[in-house]
Image 1 (cartoon, rainbow over the protein chains, first blue to last red):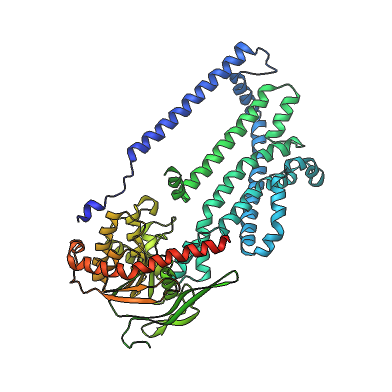
Image 2 (cartoon, helix red, strand yellow):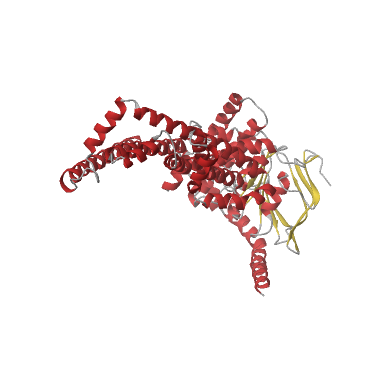
Length: 273
Length: 272
C-alpha cells in the first residue's frame, strides 16, 4: 500500500525535448542549404536566361541595391502598415462581434448565412471595386485585408464561446458560480484556444490580402514592388518581394503557434496522446 | 419529516423529465436522512436515477416535488453547504492543479493568495503536495481524481457528494483511492454521500448502503455496514465483508434484471 510507489511525479523529459528541438533546427538548416544550392545550380546551369529565372545570389544583390536607395524599406513599411491596420482591425472586430453574436442566438441566426457566404466568397476578387470606392491609398488596402482576415477569427470566436463543455459549466455552477463568473472563468478561457487558432488561420490570409490589394493598384508596397519589377523584366526584384513575404508569413504563423502552445498547452499534448 | 439532528435530509423528493410527449419518472418519493460525519453510499442498477439524485441534492437541478435540506435549511441553489466530486474529473484544463483546487474559495471571493494557500494545503492532504504547478493533462487519472477531491474539500462545505468518482479508474488504482478516501474522510470529518455501482466499494467505505429500485427510483432497502473501523483493504477478503456484498447483490440482482428488461422494452417501443 505504499503511497510513494503510487505517486510517481510525471516525467518532463527535458533532455529528450532539447534533443528534439536541436534535431528539428538541424533539419531546417539542411533543408535550406539544399534548397539554396539547388536554386543556384538550376539558375546557373539549366536555365541560362535571367529573364525566366535568376540565381539567388543576384536576388541578394538586387535586395542590397533596393535597400541602399531606401526603396525596399519604403515598400516594407507601406505593406507592414497595411497589414497591421487591416489585421489588427479584423482581430478587434472579429473577437468583439464574435462575443456579441455568441451571446444573442437570435441575431446569430439572422447573420449566420451571410457570414458563411462571405467566408466562402473570394473577397480579393472585389479588390478593384474597393480601389474604386476607397482610392489607391491605405484605406482600400485596409478594407480588403480586413474583409479577408476577419471571418476565420469571427467564426472561431463564436464556435469557441458556444461550444463550451457543459460538464465544466456544471462544475462551476456546483461551486456556486454566478453567470458572470461562468463567463469569465469558464467560457472565455475555454474559447481562447479557438480564438488563437482563428488568428493563426487569418494571418496568412491577411498577408495574401495585402499583396493582392496592392496588385490592383498602389503607389508602394511589396505587392507593388513585385508588379513593377515583373513589368520591367526585373526577375530578381520579383523574388526580393516574394522572399520577404514568405519570411513574414513563416514568422507570423510560427509566432501564433508559439502563442497557442503557451496559452493552451493541454491541446498540444492532447494531440500527441 | 426532517429529523432534528440530520445533516442532510430529503423529503418526498421526486423528479420527472419530459421527453417529447412522454413523461419519464426518474425518482419517486425519496426520504433519506444522513447524519453528521456519516458515510452513506447509494447503489442501484444503471439508469435508476442515482446521478439525478445527487444532482437534485446539490441543487444543480430542481425537483418536481419534495425538498432537500442541509442543517434544516432548504437547498434551492448549488454550493450551499455541499460540494460535488464529479465522475469525469471536471478539472479546467487551462488551470494548474493549485488553481483548479482554489476554484471554490476563488468564486466565493477569497483573495487569490489565501485561496492558493488553502488549495495547496488540501492538495497535500490528498497526497499531491508539490503538484500545484502541474496541469491536469500531465497527471494520471487517479491523480486527477485526487485533485477533484481536493477541490471539493477546499470549497469548505461539510458535505461531499461523490458521483462514481472512481468509475473511470483501473481496478488497482481504484482500490488505493478507496483507502485514501477513507483516510481523508476520517481526517476531515466530512459527511459523505457517494453514488456507485460497485457493491464492494459501497460496503468497504460506508456506514450505510441505500439500495434504489429501477426507474422510478425508490428506496428499496437500507443495509447498515457494521464492520469495524478503521478498515484496511484486506477487510475485503473477510467473511463478514463477503456477507454484506452478497446481501446487497441479492437485493440488487432482480433490479438489474428488471433494468435490462426495461431498456429492452424502451428500445423495442422506439423501433416499432
